[in-house]
Image 1 (cartoon, rainbow, N blue to C red):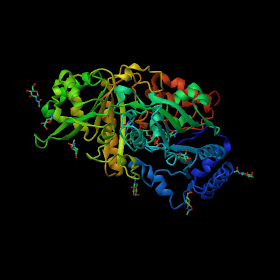
Image 2 (cartoon, rainbow, N blue to C red):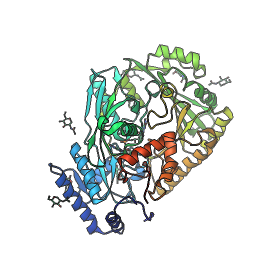
Image 3 (cartoon, rainbow, N blue to C red):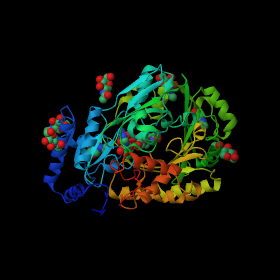
Image 4 (cartoon, protein in one colour):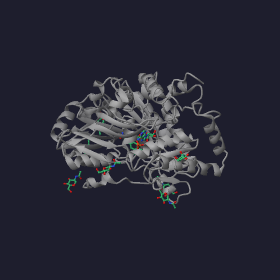
Length: 536
Ligand SMILES: Cc1cc2nc3c(=O)[nH]c(=O)nc-3n(C[C@H](O)[C@H](O)[C@H](O)COP(=O)(O)OP(=O)(O)OC[C@H]3O[C@@H](n4cnc5c(N)ncnc54)[C@H](O)[C@@H]3O)c2cc1C
Ligand SMILES: *[C@@H]1O[C@H](CO)[C@@H](O)[C@H](O)[C@H]1NC(C)=O
Ligand SMILES: *[C@@H]1O[C@H](CO)[C@@H](O)[C@H](O)[C@H]1NC(C)=O
Ligand SMILES: *[C@@H]1O[C@H](CO)[C@@H](O)[C@H](O)[C@H]1NC(C)=O
Ligand SMILES: *[C@@H]1O[C@H](CO)[C@@H](O)[C@H](O)[C@H]1NC(C)=O
Ligand SMILES: *[C@@H]1O[C@H](CO)[C@@H](O)[C@H](O)[C@H]1NC(C)=O
Ligand SMILES: *[C@@H]1O[C@H](CO)[C@@H](O)[C@H](O)[C@H]1NC(C)=O
Ligand SMILES: *[C@@H]1O[C@H](CO)[C@@H](O)[C@H](O)[C@H]1NC(C)=O
C-alpha cells in the first residue's frame, strides 16, 4: 500500500498475489493457506496439522501473543500473519522455507520474540511466522566445556542447564532470562561478563542453519563467510538458525554483586564522571552497569533529580572487590556490607531481579504473554563526557520526562578482539554503550507518541557526546528510527544507512555474503542486509 514496489526480486505471480491480498480477498487468503499446507504435507513425512495455525484456528491468537514481548505490538491494528508454523523437528523448518518460497510469501522468524521493534512477528506485506519455540533442546557437555543450544531455547534455560551440570561454568550472554537464543546470538549478545569474556558470539564454535534452498548446513558446509555473518550480522538475513554450538566459560564458585544509588544531591555527577574513567579500565572481572533515571527528589520537595544506580557483578570475592574499588573508585565509598557473595547462578537470578532465595527453576519460566510497552535506542560513547556536559544531560533528561539511560562499560576483553573478527564492530575505542530506555505500563496512542518523541529528543541532544561517522548502534537494540529498507532500486544505499551504524566497516562483507547465499533476497525484513543488485 505504502510501497509501490517492495519486492523487485520476487516473481510477478507473487506480486499479483500480494496486491490481491492487500486488497483483502478472503478466498485468496484461504488459498495461500491451502497451497502452503498442501506443499508442507508434500514436503514432510509427518502430520502437519499439528504445526500449522491458520487465522481461523481457535489457538491462533494465543500462539501469536505468547512471544510478543513488547506490548506496543499487541494491538488489533498490528498486521497479523496468514499462518503461524511451529516446527517440532528440523525437517519442518526446511519444509517451511521451501514452501514459503514456492508460494511466494514472506516468512518472519521468531525465537524468543524480544525484538524491540517486533520485526520477528510483524510485516506490512502478507507473511508467515516461523515460530521456533518448540526447538529448544540444550545439550551441555562439561568434559569438553561445550553445549549445543537450539534457537528456540531461552537464555534462562541455557543458564539453568549449565548449572545443572556444573557450578563453576557459565556463559556470557544477556541478563534477561526470557530472551531467545536465536535472535540474541545471531545479533551478537552481551551481558554482565562482557569485560572478562566478550560477547556471546565470541564463544560460538559451530552452528546449524537452514538455507534458502531448504538445506541444513553446519560450519563446515556453510563456509567461513556465512558462519562469520551469523555471529552478529543478524540471522534473519541469511537463513533460519537451528542451533549454535558454544564454548562454556569458567566462573568462580563465589561471585560478588552490589547495587548502590546516588542522587544529584549526593554528588551523583562526580560519581558518573569518575565512573567513565574507571568502569571501562578497571579489573576485567568487574562489570559496573550505570543506570540513570529522572525521579522526584526526596530532599527537595517537588523537584526532579537524577538517580544514578550502579549494578555490578564481580567474578571474585567481596574482600578483593572492596580493596580494588577503594583504590580505583574511592568516590563510591563501597564497603564490605554493601556486597553480597553468592554462586554464579544466584547472581543470574539477582540480575534478573528475582527475590533473594528464588530457586534457579525460575529461569525455566518462559513468562509467556506478558510484556510492558518499550522503546529503546542505542549509542556509543568514545570520549569521557565532561562534568558540564553531564549537567546539561541531566537538565535535558528532566525536561524530557521519562527516558532513562543504561551505560554498559566496555574495555577488557572487548578491546582485545578485532572489529572485523565478527560482524559486531564496536570493540576497542568504545568506553561504554548507551541504551535509551523508556518503559510504560499502559498504552494509548498518545502515550506512545509522547514517549517515542521523548527518546528521539534525547537522542538528538546527545549528538555531540557520542560516536560519529557513523553514529553507531547495537543491532540487538533494534531501532527502526535509524533507517528501514524498501527493497527498491536503492536497497543497497538504504541498507547502508542502518547497516553502517550497526556494522561499521563490516557492512560490505555482510552484503557480499548475503548476495552469495540468498541472491533473490528471500530472507529479508525492515533492516536486513541487502543484496548487491546487478539487475533492477
Ligand atoms: C527484556 C529484554 C532484555 C534484553 N536484554 C539483553 C541483554 O542483556 N543483552 C543483549 O545483548 N540484548 C538484550 N536484549 C535484546 C535481545 O538480545 C534482542 O532483542 C534479541 O534479538 C532477542 O532475541 P529473540 O530470539 O528473543 O528475539 P526475536 O524477536 O525472536 O528475534 C529477533 C531477530 O532475530 C531474528 N531471529 C530470531 N530467531 C532466529 C533464527 N532462529 N534464525 C534466524 N533469525 C532469527 C528475528 O527474525 C528478528 O529479526 C533484551 C531484550 C529484551 C526485550
Ligand atoms: C503435492 O504433491 C502432489 C502429488 O505429488 C502434487 O500433485 C501436488 O501438486 C503437490 N502440491 C503442492 C502444493 O506442491
Ligand atoms: C488448530 O491448530 C492446531 C495446530 O495445528 C491443531 O492441532 C488444532 O487441531 C487446530 N484446531 C482447530 C479447531 O482447527
Ligand atoms: C531433543 O532432545 C530429545 C532428547 O534427547 C530428542 O528426543 C529430540 O528428538 C530432540 N529434539 C529435537 C528437535 O532435536
Ligand atoms: C553501604 O551500606 C551502608 C549501610 O547499609 C549504607 O549506609 C551506605 O550508603 C552504603 N554505601 C553505598 C555506597 O551504597
Ligand atoms: C559531596 O561532595 C562534597 C564536596 O566534595 C562533600 O563534602 C560531601 O561529603 C559529598 N557528599 C557525599 C554524599 O559524598
Ligand atoms: C538472602 O537470604 C539468605 C538466607 O535466607 C541470607 O543469609 C542472606 O543474607 C540474604 N541476602 C540478602 C542480600 O538479602
Ligand atoms: C496482549 O493482549 C491481551 C489482551 O488482548 C492480553 O491478555 C495479553 O496479556 C497481552 N500480551 C502481551 C504480551 O502484552
